[in-house]
Each structure stands twice: as C-alpha cells, then as structure tokens.
Picture 1 (cartoon, rainbow over the protein chains, first blue to last red):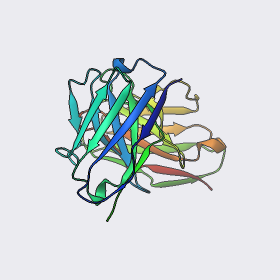
Picture 2 (tube, rainbow over the protein chains, first blue to last red):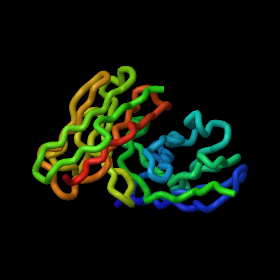
Picture 3 (cartoon, rainbow over the protein chains, first blue to last red):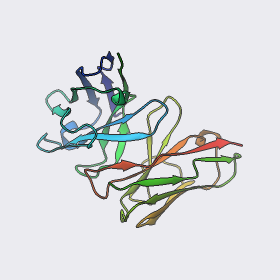
Length: 120
Length: 108
C-alpha cells in the first residue's frame, strides 16, 4: 500500500524558515518524480514544486521560486521542502504527492498534508 | 501561465442525477488534463487523467471528455459519496502546472 506521510508543519513568523518532510513507502520511491502541492485554508490547490526521480531536475512555482528548495533522499525514501523567507501568503496545508510516472505530472497518491501557518 | 476556469462554482443535485462539470483552459492543453475529487478533511483523489482515462479503481460512472480548451467531467448517476469538490489540472506546459478553482457538487 502506498503511503505518504508529511511532517514539519508549525506556526512560524514571517521571514522565518521551515523544513517539511515526507516519508514514502509502498512503492519504488526512486522510480518516480515527486511533488509538493499546497492548499490555503478554504481555497483551491496550488502546485509548488517537483523533483525528478534522481533529484537532478527541480522546478518551482513562480510564487516560491528563490525561497523554497525541494530535495530528496532516495536511500531514506524521503522528500523534503526547505522553506525560507516565509510570507503570510504561504500559510497552507502542504501535500506531498507522487507523480503517476517519471514525468507524467499527474498525482495519483497524496499524503494527508502538514499545516504551515505563517503569522506574527 | 495557463488559467483553468471551472463552472459552475456550485452544482446542486440529488442522488441519482447526472452531474456535468466544465473546465475551460485559457489556451490549448491538448489532452493533458486531469480531474480530482476532494472531500472535506481529505486529500484529493485522482479520477481522470489525459482527459478521458479513468485512474485505477475509479468507478465507471465517472467519465471525462474534451481536448484543446474545453473539458467535461460527467458523473452519470450521483452516489451519496460523490458529493465533494472537483478540480481540474493541466500539465501541458509543465513545469507551470495549474489547477482550476474547483466545482462543489452539493446535495440539493
């Protein structure tokens, strides 16, 4: 059974930093591109970032480019999101999501999310 | 950035009725469109990918159609568990992956 379990969400002040983690199991982690997708409270879905199976390619939404860094450790079946210079508009539930393939860019499995609140 | 516009924002229907949800793209996305279902407090679930292919385990009452800029998700006969929010998503011009704003299907 595929499982994605996010952690690391907390309340942080504007300008602060945070690192989210996602532990994956039930599939061959290093066969797939992985993503972060977020959802602000009561709002829709926003794609944040993706990383290729080997970590060699990363992409970001314009809203987070230069502030967030995605990474992965295939030896630990784990995905990460380093979030710097946080803004109030980054407040959201952050989901880790598995790509349907190597570069299909649909999301067939999602974690339950970890809540990041940026507030003073 | 490709903007996806979903309509209507809310659809009020009764169990057993047919639901027709629309997603319109600001420019062609070919057939690179997916649909997701999200229930309160849950993560989204992939229903349809590449406009018309049902994901694993998705009931046959869900079907997708369209190409280019106009897409439709049809639920042939609503079951009680189908009342939820539905999102479309395009991957045509990745990495600029975008979602629509969602359609809420509520019980009438």
